[in-house]
Amino acid sequence: MTEYRNPSPELRARVALEKHGFRNTHSLGQNFLLDAGLLDHLLDLAGVGPEDNVLEIGPGAGVMTALLSERCRRVLAVEVDRGLEPVLNDVLAGLENARVAYRDVMKADVAALTAEAFGNEPWRVVANLPYYITADILLRLVTAARAPESIAIMVQREAAERVMSHPGQKQWCALAATAQSYGRARVLADVPPEAFDPPPHVQSQFIIIEKHPEPVVTPRDPQVYLRVINTAFAMRRKTLANNLKAAFGLDNDAARAVLGAAGVDERVRGEALTLQELCRVADGLEAYRREQGTGNREQE
Ligand code: SAM
Image 1 (cartoon, rainbow, N blue to C red):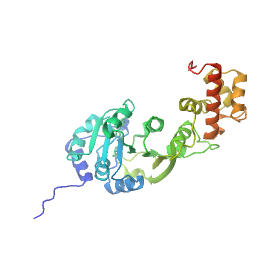
Image 2: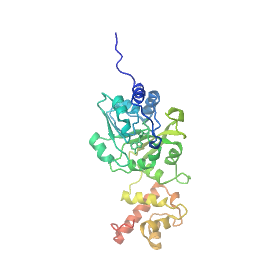
Image 3: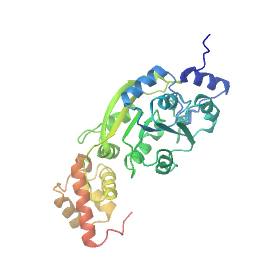
Image 4: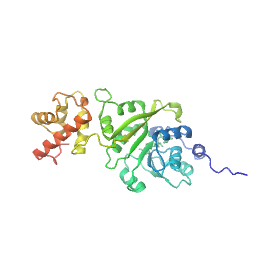
């Protein structure tokens, strides 16, 4: 006789959710993906394998976490809702390479958590995230000192369109410029509302942003570059020169000199600039401030 010992993660999750009487919290974006077939497909598309350490944000009932644990080297999941702890304990029981940290990822020290979990090894992000934190968490991940190798996440279709946008398009924004400075973004799959439990009122896309093998921009000071990106999109009806003046405390001549040195027309609006042009502006600004000796006296 064969004893049936190992129900699938999907079944374990469904049983655990029922057993612990779990109720989804709308404000935490708890639209779960429980279908292991779909999740396996998404993980195939994300291309994670046995060598990979994976940070998952928002494991929910843990089906994807369990599947990641089967495929990958180590999984660290960060979940804000302690109410999911009994569910995750059941679903992840016996999976030695999977660990859950109960934290708000927006307040957590992700660098410390990943260093503790993965040491100096590279890591990737795979997540079906709550949509209310998409932009904030993406910005934090792509600008981190030790950024992940790739970020495969579920996002609302409009967010995917913004992240994939290019200069000249109306969606081109600080998020897109920052994300594309880090890596190449592409859509892996359309995921319909019915795939989620409960279904969200929006269309979703599973996207990946893969870190550029060689940087596409190499600003002298990455912090100034990020500030220039934010400044460029700060007030879209103003010229870049005016936005730079306001953000960096420059006078007319200085703004003109910085843009001139960067080879950028002084009447241009920030949203028209490519990453390389934004980088030249940041370098010009950095050089100007160094000349003036104002590099350390920021005008925030
Ligand atoms: N990944 C699971 C799945 O696919 O079924 C759950 C996805 S659900 C869209 C988002 C998950 O993120 C929920 O478990 C929610 O509690 C968690 N979450 C929401 N805000 C969070 C935050 N600030 N930090 C960590 N987890 C969060």
